[in-house]
Length: 114
Image (cartoon, rainbow, N blue to C red; front, side, top):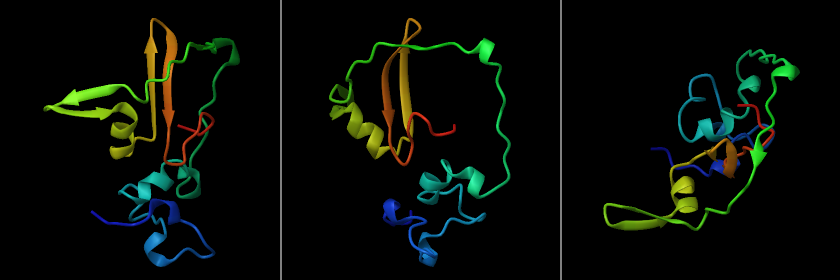
């Protein structure tokens, strides 16, 4: 696995060669951390249109689950640490039709196209 500082990818004008996202590497880690939220800068895309009448407003009843401990193979880790260690871009939990937890990292936000 390539060891690069993800926060330096595509920074600078021009970015150093080893930090440039190209058609050859855009789907590979660590370049995909930047490229998956900037796909439109790499390849042609089209927005998917939606009918505003079909929109469903999600009810948010957020709970902070970042510090919940998860056990696996006798190892305990906090949920947030697992999500960060796995390079998770975004993670949502819904329960009974309500959004109860959301996590965003690696250049993603609520507004990021996905």
